[in-house]
Image (cartoon, rainbow, N blue to C red; front, side):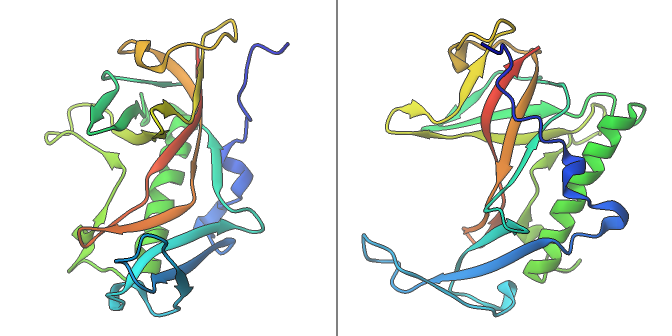
Length: 208
């Protein structure tokens, strides 16, 4: 049995050379009646920023229903943070200025966020409506982090974590400063509290 459970889908798979993101497709959806338990959605091609009924935006790459990437080796600088049943894990772009592969990965992630912002129709006057998932400390003393979400539903995680021997481990036992690679994905941009949010969700964690 293989010890490593990752997909090994490098970000270069998406062929975004020269910032060509034309293979990414966005589909906007409104909710017919947000007050009903069973929601029904319909497509609306209005520019998102002009659509006050917008619920979410699907993201597709060519014929796939998500953008899935295996990260480079990254460090978890903080403990996993839990807030009202939502679990967040930060991954650091360590040495991204000098490490060529990490620098390319960082720029790829930034370019994706820029493409989202363009599709939504934001500009410098309202760009704060987009909540970036690449975060920096106020003084930019440390390398930036990527904020990722650990899917959690029905009292269990919907992602797996493995140690170096390929054994399943308790995600909450992962210690600060652990090094890892992860399979992460995005599939939607959500509208929440008048902000646009595209969270990277974790499928697999492989400790290094």
